[in-house]
Amino acid sequence: RKSAAGTTFREALFPRAVPGCLLVSTAAAPAISKRYTVVTEAGKAVAKRVSYSNVYDQDKTYRLATDAPDVITFRHENDLLSVPARSEGKICMRVAAPARFDGEGWQAERGRRDREVLVFVNNVTDGVNEETFAISLSVAQ
Image 1 (cartoon, one colour):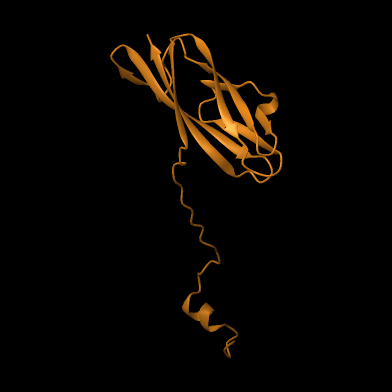
Image 2: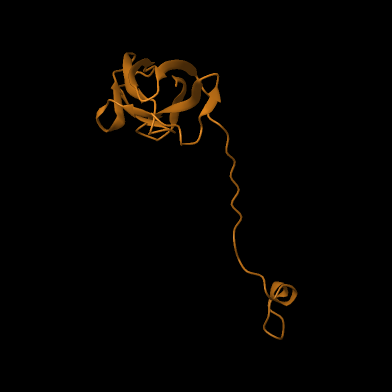
């Protein structure tokens, strides 16, 4: 209610209050469903194929993504994988080891460089992450 002076109770108590909102978010590392190891030499690339099953009763298209596009590239048009209902498809990727290790994420151990790279399989329809794979890349120097 307004007082005789024309101000509300809240305005009288908090004259400088600014309306706003509070945004809260949480983040967690994705659950890794499968792990693979790739061994190669510095400056070399290897091809890796991983089976992926569509457990749904309809055809699905998945968008493939990685947290290290400098290391993993997908051999699918527009990074899309289409898998028929209740069938299996192959995720084909090229895993490239750099000739020099200037970037972050590489761990040195006994003449080798190691790095874990994540591959995300996301449903194109709703953008939900269906599965996450970890590729452990071990590079001989």
